[in-house]
Length: 355
Image (cartoon, rainbow, N blue to C red; front, top):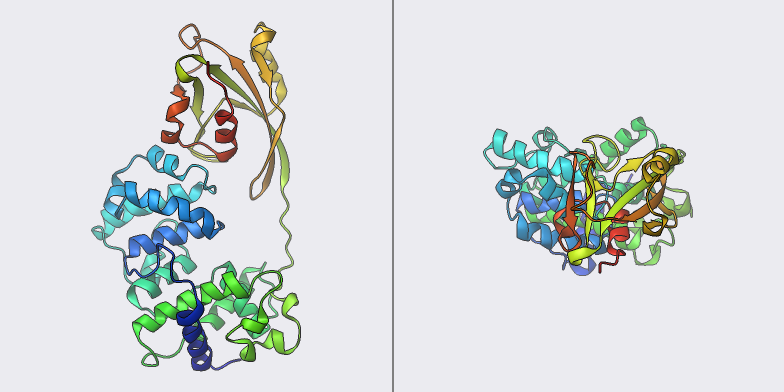
């Protein structure tokens, strides 16, 4: 087990010299911005978040503005970023901060976790960056760093091992008085930077690692063995059949319905969906063949599903079409940015050709 002070000193010095410093959510102690960036960065690349973060802040510059928003507006801004439960929890959390805490985020790791959608690692990031609390972030990248550093033999697919690694991570944070609050920020950022830039999943740059001399996996030439995670993700294949009513006049219009508030794409908008082809064929019976366009199936991977999206486009006149239901609405193609759309659906709709 490396000494905490030696590990922290090396990490902090490296972060200040060579770590990432130009990201828009760095250099702030504003818990709103730190929280927003942490949620966006969950399972999402930095390059993608760089596009969304400033747009989101421009529309919702503070937690009060986000709390006042309609969920649909939040989902619309999140559209394309994926993992939409993050956006719903973000909205709920903002409302809880305003309603229960007077618009100010709690200042401790423990209290932050009482908010909707804030887990242990996100709470640690806010507490460390904004309030200087001695608590270690342990996201996916940091788990990889610490697993190699400690040659941690636990199976991180299992909760007890995750808890054990978390406990070890806290022992690596130096005791109070060893460094200042700004050092805690550099330490936390250093853990994240190390996992993102050097201690990567494949082909880690061990020769450039500031803590190579302390790394037990490197000492035993077993870096590729860690982290240990035996559980493999199994995705269930599922086919969806979608019917897009498309009026090509006046710039183009599509009929969209809001998905249920639970399940895949909860609260987002898309064309009517069926779990098999029979209802779609029944809906198309009597429709002129010249107006029907069956698109090639599109594959879309979710965490636990592999979706095959079969889209049929029917050219219609919205003025003359009745009986589409009360749960949907006609949306102009030029106004799709204002509607929360799953990314593959947005791609399909962007390919429609108005008159």
